[in-house]
Image (cartoon, rainbow, N blue to C red; front, side):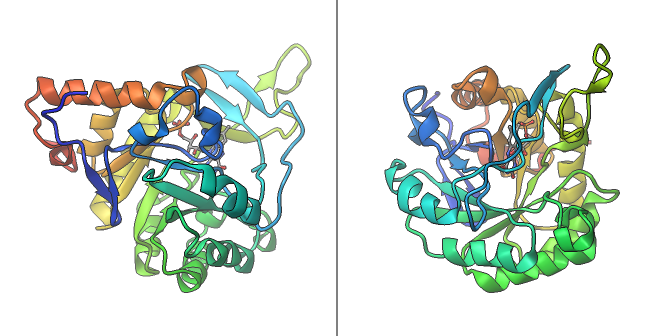
Length: 305
Ligand SMILES: Cc1cc2nc3c(=O)[nH]c(=O)nc-3n(C[C@H](O)[C@H](O)[C@H](O)COP(=O)(O)O)c2cc1C
């Protein structure tokens, strides 16, 4: 990485040494990647979404490959918030910004996850995964209904003083409306996007490729959708944005930053190369050197039209 470029950025008050984080669900609790990369060279990590109790998720198969991406229906397997605090957090490298992701099936349970994470040593901020089906709303995702999303953010805001990023679902008509709802309820930042609802069919068996039938599409296939949504959200609110969706190169990171992201998360690409986040960081450095960018922050929102 070029020493001349100032790579530091800030995501809702959390100082990052560079803008590349790993996305929730694609880097476990961080320790899974030790031995492949030095986690401290990343901007930070977003750990797997946590529920109050441990969850085993769907039985396999729960991932299928599609052109330029994959569809997953993991259904949020995780160790539970208490085991995360007691066993996972303490062994992560000191100085690594760790974003804990909260998820549940009811609002009061979401708020309880946030309350337990509040003040946990080593948690830099909480990312609310609002893309899960809400049992009391007949299975509609929290992030698909503005009123449900408002109630969720309000309850979690009241439950914690930690910095709160809301991770938006792309499975909506107006992403800008959802962003405004989060801003109105006191969110500190937004992460977008989560996976795009999708399905695949095995025509030999005439069955859905995944027993769950529906899943979330991720990878480069969704990048233009994610970029469009970051751009629209930037026009709609003043909150800091963390861009996510198919980011595979340093140039992809530049595109998201130009459209208004302060930082980005790399997800599916880590499955093709566990070092992807650091390769992308180095490509970003090379771009900055090539274009005379002295501080990476100069790129944020600098799209020319
Ligand atoms: C296998 C898998 C598991 C995921 N689990 C979570 C999760 O637990 N919480 C969450 O907020 N997002 C989860 N995601 C979504 C990613 O964090 C990310 O938003 C999405 O994959 C788009 O980014 P990408 O195209 O770079 O993968 C998961 C994605 C994948 C592929």
